[in-house]
Amino acid sequence: MLPLFNEAVDIDDVLKRISDQSYDDFEVLLADGGSSDGTIDHLKRWEKADSRFRYIHNPRKLQSAGLNTALAHCCGEYLVRLDGHSFVQKDYVQRCVDLLDQTGAAVVGGRMIAQPVDSLVGRGIALANRSSWGAGPAKFHSGATSGPAETVYLGAFRTQVVRELGGWAEDVGVNEDYELNHRIRKAGHGIWLAVDLGVGYRPRGSFKLVAIQYFRYGRSKAAVMRRHPDSVKTRQVLPSMLFPAAAGILIPPLRTLGVLSVGTHSAAVVAGAARSDAALGDRVTGALAALAMHWSWSLGFWHGLIWKFPAAYEQ
Image (tube, rainbow, N blue to C red):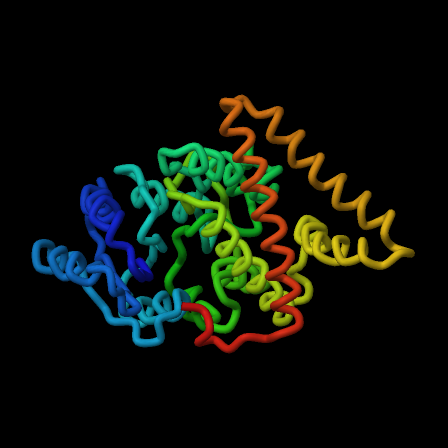
């Protein structure tokens, strides 16, 4: 199943990879939230050409609502969740099904593998996306070993488990996957990360777009924290303190601490980028991208804590 909105650039490549899967006993549910860039025309052509593809209108527009709309139409024992810019290998679905059978987990998945836009900024953003000093230490970004995990990138699920737990939350912004996986773990089910199983992902191509993306991530993390206070991890609390630390610089008693905190964070990001084996230009833009990610995430997190947004806000 794919929740979609304005994905005309990549959608044919994405759906071609799905149609070529070695595991072919499946239906592809395409829940579109009212795209205005021609995506729907592409979806209808695929639906007409291949009976396995099914276009579904998602009137609520939210990504999570699209997933729930598709879930309502899902007939299989398993469901595989993809996006309009996720690129899978020919055996991806087969391997997901095999892992669900072998591990007994309710969710299995692999790593996010950034496939950059071919530009200096695009390569830097991709470098930050796949690095602990950029996107953070979550295992699906840079995990070295397979095994139980908090969450996975996209993933394949046991349909009945998702239904029993009520599907994806529609009031947590773009953090709906993590929120669902948190509930799945609390219900006693397992989540399994296979690090040799990857999904290609095309990151944003500009600092502005990546900043908007991570502002939404931060705001959505705050929404999940409202719902599940026990879901917050130390690695998520630390970046949230960037904005308060910067504000502290304006308060004389806290100025030294604020400068030290902001400076230490910036130095750590630059040092992390410098240690990578990428070209010098990519390391520079990677560090800038990571700083944009972290500051935007922190601002979004505090925005989400102070102003609770309605489910219809995220489009």
